[in-house]
Image 1 (cartoon, rainbow, N blue to C red):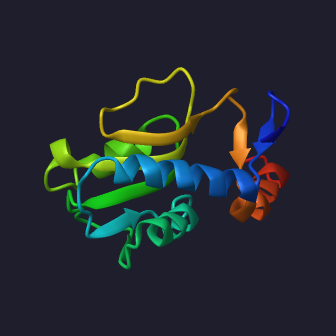
Image 2: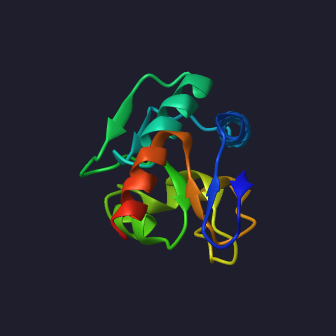
Length: 143
């Protein structure tokens, strides 16, 4: 990552690819079979596709109302826990649920279901290669 601590950090494609490999190894070590990957249409879509390729999973479900516990949920970052709290109630068996993120925000309490590639070094906003235009738009309008 590059950038400064106070504002944002750019995440490079090579770092994303490296973290996807780390996540694939962690998931494979669980010695479980997963039927699909579930994600949300914004931050998790690109990492979900990359992880699906690494794991040989063909089915990616986006914005599901119900989530099977044999589906890996993928997001770009575990930050405030808001997304996790929203989707855990949609899972058929939360104790078997696996929630995967590229990054986990440092200093947070993580749920036991979380598997992450790396903890953040700072509290900066992470700008991924696929959302750099969104970041510019948000910054331009002060959102």
